[in-house]
Image (cartoon, rainbow over all chains, first blue to last red; front, side, top):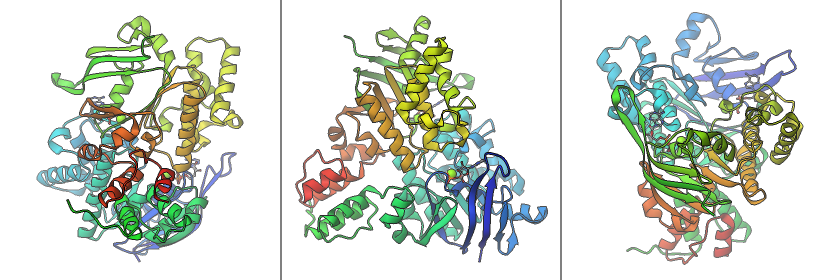
Length: 288
Length: 276
Ligand SMILES: Nc1ncnc2c1ncn2[C@@H]1O[C@H](COP(=O)(O)OP(=O)(O)O)[C@@H](O)[C@H]1O
Ligand SMILES: Nc1ncnc2c1ncn2[C@@H]1O[C@H](COP(=O)(O)OP(=O)(O)O)[C@@H](O)[C@H]1O
Ligand SMILES: [Mg+2]
Ligand SMILES: [Mg+2]
């Protein structure tokens, strides 16, 4: 097993009036090459969990193992393990500090002993992966970009590191639909080519539906569901319980079903839902 | 009476180091009346935030003019009044919080305007009631959820008693619960308080609740009309890299299967009514 999470508990500000239990006894296993989505309302512990997976701070109790070794263990081991996990933060704009987009993305690469040409190739590749044109943005100052562009630069700097485990914390928030689709397609394709492990945190059920095969749902720091993506994502009572909306195509199909129509409900995309309604209504596509 | 917002031939270029510049707005003409609820959509980098920042003089036109309630933003003597008339709420709730308790945060704007303390107290009270956060007045804002922080930012904007509030992607960092809280509050501000709303969003379903939708592309305003009209132009929107609201998208696809559905179908309920 690539990643093992054992009895992971995390309490912020322990022993103060602001003490807050963010994760409670979480147990999980993630195999190499899996594509996993993490779903849950704000405050359910998603960002805490992925930051612990990336070894950014120590949990209150419990362990995170990467190929059997603790990512919070001895410093030398932990540092080696942490290099294999790339986490793109939920609010990446706060993490940007270099003077140009190129230097920002090249920053982490400098620790990898790469040749100059290889660094340039990776920076360009990473910018294209996130839908930015290297020629147009590489020499610009990161703070002189629009908010959405800045988030993509931060993400590119993680992709450029080619981590074995890629974790994206709400990567599509604040992106337009084309940017979002391109990003998900590119990351999905890259995952299939390399067989890396992909973990995505998102509230956008339709994003998860196209990208992951398994979904873990969190509520108040506990795992409340863990199963095949389509099953978890169309489980209306579960989604209602954790305060998430079903995607509109699913909501429409559920409403039609309540009105007595015989339709499937696990269609997340408008094209799928339209085809399902057309089938149930016995429509023939007009070929023009 | 003149429209509340009047924008004429607005151009804006960000100066870059070394004398270069980035042209972010090109020849924008736009008027918005008092009490309108307008949504603004467009791809990343199309100039939405740049336009928004012209509405309360955070940016001043490189060419052309912007008038708020008849006052031109480029006149330094008008800036104070304009900032009182037009409030702003931005995307990231964490960057907007300035104080250590919710009520101090909400009081920040009116304090800066030199309003007397009793009046500030009244305004803070009513702003917190308006967004449903009265119970949290003594809380440190850091302890609130993202949606609640965004409501604090809205209360802060409300406390300056603006005629208009510009929301720049207020929900894109929020979960569905937070999003609903914020959208319901925005809708209420418009219908009950008569506040003019400009809502910038990437969510087509959110844009569909406005009375009027504006579309920007590469610094230009390229579409302007009622939601049904704008979203009726699916091919054009897709060419801009924008989606349709999911229900509108499904309706258009079903029309290509020969089903006749009214152009006004925007919501799940509309669609169920049309189909059953
Ligand atoms: N540094 C911190 N100090 C105190 N509480 C925190 C801190 N960071 C997060 N929390 C709290 O822990 C809970 C889980 O947070 P987080 O993991 O960020 O959730 P999510 O990513 O699901 O929104 C939230 O209630 C949050 O307010
Ligand atoms: N501070 C800045 N300096 C230079 N260019 C900027 C700055 N802010 C935004 N831009 C550029 O202006 C254009 C419009 O940006 P913006 O108004 O933020 O777009 P949107 O809000 O539609 O995503 C983009 O090309 C962006 O890169
Ligand atoms: Mg989070
Ligand atoms: Mg913007």
